[in-house]
Structure formats: structure tokens, C-alpha cells
Length: 220
Image (cartoon, rainbow, N blue to C red; front, side, top):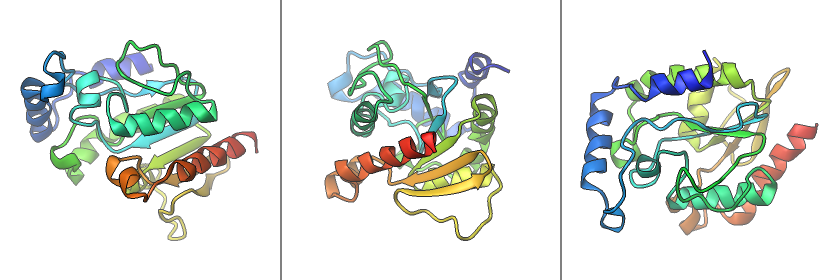
């Protein structure tokens, strides 16, 4: 299976009735600021370089971000924070991501979430994440990244489950790097959510350091 075939299959997914109902309701009702938008309202595919050495895993699409635009981390505050950092680190062609056709290109980096559909209150349940897991497994197998970056504890725990890692010394710590196999690293970071960035839990300098760690691992 190719990534194109995988994403084509993903777009027809209706495994999670709660998420299907919610993503489509949000797309119908919209936010007033985006009332002229034709919301995506479907599962959101991964995005980036198909031959990437770095794979960034997030939580789920934002209700009025990716669920509106149809592209990972596009159209909301989390994406603004992420893509500006990736631009500074040389992984992105521009610091802003507004829509699927804004020209953004990612270099040596691919991104996808644990859960492909927007969940109510941004909280997918365990069964919903399990339903989505095969898509991420397939992407890991197709891309073979050297470095996986987990944005947030939910993504971090999901990656450990997928890779069957049970080492108690591998714990979620911001900007921690773990050598999880002979050819693979796992790096953990706080999620660039508005809650984290506006409270100072995750600062620009802290996030930039994560991407410096990634660069060091790539050349190491």
C-alpha cells in the first residue's frame, strides 16, 4: 500500500460513530469567523515529505483548524506555533499555514495525529484511538523515520503502544530523547496547544530546543 492508497482509504473511514457525528456537526455549524468556508469535515490525512527522516505525531485535528482546512496543524494557533518553529529549524518552507493550497512544503518531515477525526473537547476515547492506530502503524512502515517526535503525552503513550515499548525508564519529559531501537529515536515535547503556549508551559525557546535536538539526532 502507498501513502496515497492509505489516505484514500482513510477518507472513507466511519469506524467511530461519535467522531463521525461530531466532525460533521462542526463542519455544518461552523464558527462565525469561518462561515464562508467549506469545512473539510472528514478524517484528516498525514502531511509532509513521504521520505522523511522525522515523523511528528500530534493528538487530533482541531475543530476549526484541521477539521476546517483538511491539513494537519493548519488554520489554528497550534499550527501557527508549530510551523513557525519548523520554519526556523529549516523543516518548513514558510512560517504560516492557512489552507491546503497555501504552498507550504515540509522538508524531511511528515506529520500525522493519533486520532484522525476531531473529538469533542479534544479528547478521543481509548477505543477511538485504537480504531485509528492501524493508519499510524502503516505510515511508520511506509516512511521508516529515523526520529519520531511526540507532541504531548497522549501521542507519546500511543507511540509506545504501537512500538510495543514497555521500558519504564522511557517516560514523558519535555525534550527528552530515547534511543528506542538501533535505527530509531523518540523525542517527547509538550504539545503546542494554546493552553500550553499561553500559560508559558511551552515557550518559543523551549520548542526551538526540541528541533535543535532533532537536528542533532539526524546528523548523529
